Image (tube, rainbow, N blue to C red; front, side):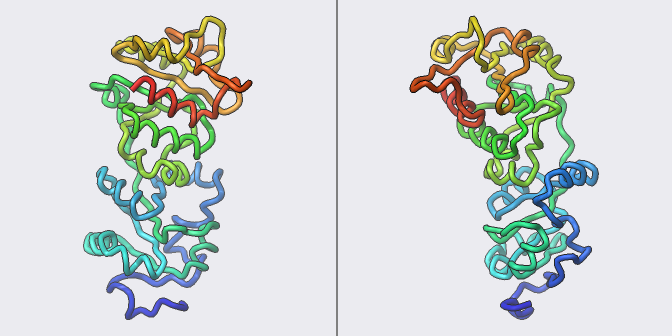
Length: 278
């Protein structure tokens, strides 16, 4: 393996020069979203990319299954490599070209870890003590899910709920875009949905649907007199919230717009709403 002499690397790492090496099967062809949707839940895995994201996952108590790095990062990330080796976790090192062929993408930050997927907590556990909750209804773009989690962490949202058809917050791209905040903000899936609206109302939440609808109140009005416990529901790209969800909600909220624009991307809308209602 060019540029990675064994003597330059930490003792105990495993050199990989075959992109089809079965020992690194967890990392094969990560650009195939359909494959990952099947593989990750079935085997209880998710992928954490970059040293900061991996560190956040470990800090949240998640367990590492293996670590894959390029030679440079194997030397520089001693704070990850050392504890992994000490715990008996396999640490694999491959040339960037080998890893790119293996995974299907360029590993920008030089490190990716296969992590054991934790069991999702119960709804009551996630909502305990929460005053501000975001619900992502059928948001299918992993980038938008990750961005919404990052805004939730930064802007005072206590918990996030995702509906059954929402993209996986632990998919590699969601985790990376969120900068690891998917490990920071308590979350779980709410199923069935939109029956979950009633479950939130029974627990004392006012449910506000962010949608374009007659009778909607302005976000500015809600900001002036927000309820003590508020669940803000954001809908899928394009179609927005389902009519059943809008009908079941306690109120409908719109973000005032100018410039002839009627709505924002769901990730941008979440940031605006979280800021106003923090």
